[in-house]
Image (cartoon, rainbow, N blue to C red; front, side, top):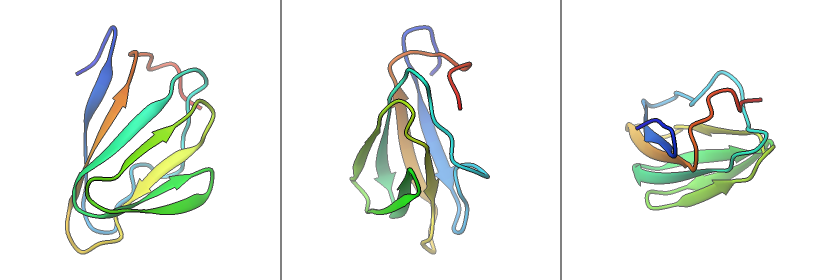
Length: 90
């Protein structure tokens, strides 16, 4: 669901996959991640956090972030941003 007042969706990662080739961040938006199904790893500013099913992470503006599925099952992660600003990416 995109714009204009919200940006959210579901990320599906297969075993061994990452959300992106490299971490990314946002200049003005924060972003929340909810691990809805499966266990993964949340990476924020190069620090790794275990992310079991049910975990929630808030990434503040300018925090570089990525997600890795290091399990043997697919994971589903919901992302939520307060506004749809596709240009707000670093």
